[in-house]
Image (cartoon, rainbow, N blue to C red):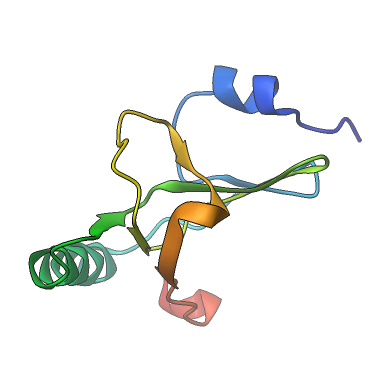
Length: 105
């Protein structure tokens, strides 16, 4: 199996897939209720954390070698540079990811 690199990943269209130790992992499609809850939670946190930014569905670069990228439901960051495609762990203050049984997604 060919390992996915950061350059490979950057060339791919944006979606909810993730990379684990260089292997592309397809994430399940989320239902509308889940998306609504995630959006509301990110907005609620963002309004209450004046020195931080809460975002939904942002790439979190955990490692470059082998590549590991996660896309948590909500991520809270202290980064002021939001003109990036992904956030590094050093800028992360909170990660929220809902893991429902596969039959509920």
